[in-house]
Image (cartoon, rainbow, N blue to C red):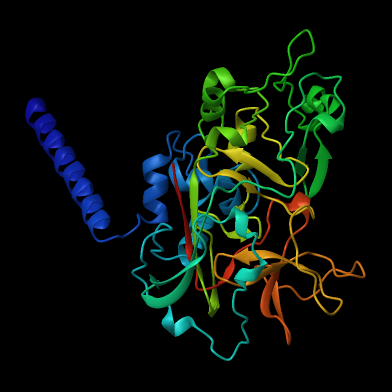
Length: 394
C-alpha cells in the first residue's frame, strides 16, 4: 500500500512539473512574461515570500533598485505587481513590441523634433541615419545613431583611490539618500561606519585599496552576482576595456507623447550630445550586497561590460545648448525623443511642476524632461513617450 501511494505521489509530481514546464514554454513562445506570483515562486529560495538581490537574476537583478520602491532590500508581490501593471508584456529593448500603443498617443500635446545638429559629429559612427522602425506596433521614423559611448569633452575617471590616504582628487563620487560623497581614501576607510556594517573593509593592512585593476576583475565584479574573490572591492572598469563596443540608439525623429508612463527596460534611457548613454538607476542593492562600491567619476559616469562608459548622473560636464530665454540648457535626448534639460535655470531655480517622470511642458520646448539631482541615482524616472531602444555590440 505504501509503495502504491509513493508511486501515485511521484506520478502526480511528474505530471505537475511537466504541466509547469509546458506552461512556461507556451508563455515563452507567445512572448508572455511570467506573472509576479510565478516569479516569486520560482526564485524565492528561502520561501519568505519576497525576493532578495541574491535570489534574482537577469533584468530583475539589474532593475532591482528601481522596483524596490520602499528601499528595504526586498521585492514583494505588491512591488512586482506594480511593475507588471505599468509595463504589461513589454518586450526587451531592441525588439518590436507586440502591444500597440497607438491609442495611448496624445496628439494634442506640443512636441519638438530631435535636432541632430546638437550632437558632436566626430563622436558619431557613420553619421546619423533615418529609418522606419516598428515601435510598439507603430511604424515610426527614427534616427539611428551609432557611437562608442566614449566622452570627449572631459576625462573619464578617476574612480577608485589607491590608498586610504589619497584625497578626493584621486577618485570619483558615490551617493546615498540623495547626497553625493567624494570617494576619498578616508571615505573608503570608513565605509563600515557609513553603512553601519562592520563587514566593510575595502583596504589591506598596509592601507592600499583593493581595486579591480584588470579587465577580468572588472567583469567578475561588475555583475549582479559578484564573484566571491572580488567582494569587498572598489570596482573600477576602464573605458579602454570596451572602447570597441558599438552602441546603437534608435530614437523617434518626432516624439509621441503617451497618456501613460512607461518603465525603463534594460537598455540606455537616453543619449548625451557626446554620444554617451544615459542609463537607468545604478543597481546599488546588487553592488552593496557584495560589500563593493562602484564609484562614478566627477562627471557622473562609470563603465560596465554591458555598455561601456555611461552616465547615471548629470553634473554639468557635457556639451549643452543654451536657450534664448532663462530656461536651463538642453543636455541630450531621452530614448523617446524628448529633450533632457539641466535641473536649474539660469537664475538657479528648479522647476516645481515636474510629473512622475521628471518632465513638464512649456510653449517653446513642448514636453521635455529635467535631469534629477546628481545624488538621486536617476537622470529621469520613467518615460512619457513612445520609446525607441538601444543595442550594444562588441
